[in-house]
Image 1 (cartoon, one colour):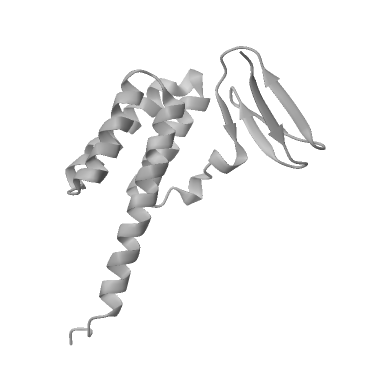
Image 2 (cartoon, one colour):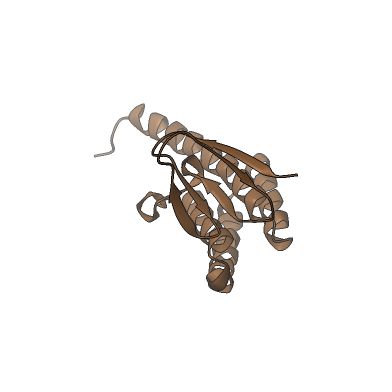
Length: 140
């Protein structure tokens, strides 16, 4: 069964490392296995600025850059190790373990989904931390 993708004019998609841009409303049918990321799933390097985001970026690169996959997989393992050592929440640990299982089975697309959940969790945790810091008086 083909993967069907609808693109808006100007929307980007990466297919096996090639960046494609829709020159009008476009409908694609991908008939075989391919590494596909829609624009909303693509992270620019400058946005990989937190532990979970760095993990996502490395996994994304391993997914779309098959020739360089080994280099990125090593980076994914190091980043995942550091993240697991820092995580205390059982919910976040479960997300990280699911991510690791998908990486181990080379199911990078599903791993990226798990990592998006980790990013959302991390974002909420950082916001809670920022809120609690604003609520306290600065130490002199």
